[in-house]
Image (tube, rainbow, N blue to C red; front, side, top):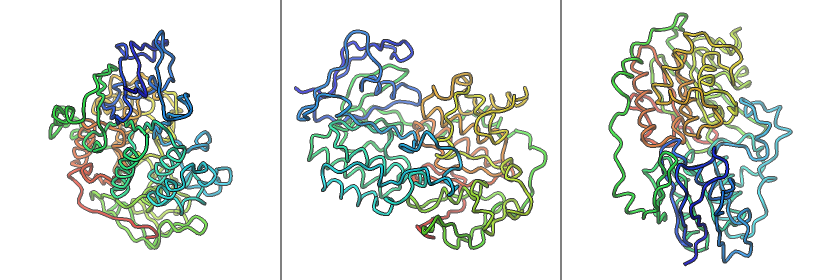
Length: 483
């Protein structure tokens, strides 16, 4: 039997990158694998080991990529990590850059980053599936998080890999695109020698073309089992995960001084946002009243994140629009910091910008000052509230770990704690559950629902998964392109 990837008693040379037990794993040609496990379990560490990123002590990973003509792993294995990098532009990326049109000149266009197609039929199928045509002349920095994933998938598949490894490939994609991607990958696995390995935190929608599952827990790689075996033994997540003790802590938090008492938290009067010839939002009227809980949805590229950039005072075009926040018209003399101190926010853009080598608790504390990074020493009482929110999200034991050493799911939990830490009047959550495992998704929903039981709390949440919406949602806004 042909094994495309195999390792026997594999132990990484560097202790920091070792699994707790030696690796013994073989992927046969024709098998399509889902690597599953909780946040921080070691899924990415396993993949990095199998792809040769970390040299082993004795037995190196063996590869057999036939019928590929190249024996090199670098030629045959392509990975998409979905840590929201912007391709060649990510080294210069900063938070809010996407909204500042004057900074676009130094960033490449989408068409300049796509390789020449080896398979013209596949290229056309990808362009049709992901609507790449209208993106070609967009600066890479202007892509929404969903469009960015479509670009990354297209770029990688055009390179004609023998083995394609994708980390949570379906998050951030709208429902129709997720279904189409499922079908495309299924057809590719049936018609070509492509082998697919998915790294999944969200395990309730494993595609049907997956044949085997490799569970990872506490940096230990379990035995490879069939998809049917895995589905038959998967544990159900309880209806609620947040403990009554932590729920009580949230409900009994003292209210801060200096709260805004506006009846209307957000007011947009025929707001239009344009970049060059492209219209993102067109004459949008929208009012969010104090205490309302909104779900904001729409296809990829419809303008959801752009709308939230106006609400969070991150978009400079807001000064040219009829926008009022907390009853105060933009441009009437208030600073963005006066607005931000009343808003708790998390988004893919924020996650992308947080490449800070700081202890996790300092990342949480930065939410008290609305900064990317921490530039002042927190008071003892501030550290206590940071520790309380980290405990609520189940990451108290990570407080002294470097943010960059955490898994992407653990990082997202830290950024969620950052959004709640100042007890904001307006909670703006843009795809907040990205990368979270099933239990942590339920925990985050519990926290959101509990927080919103408190007085005068207003919520705006974006997600492409209806099941992620908390039960407190009472209003919905659906955006379509150019609307």
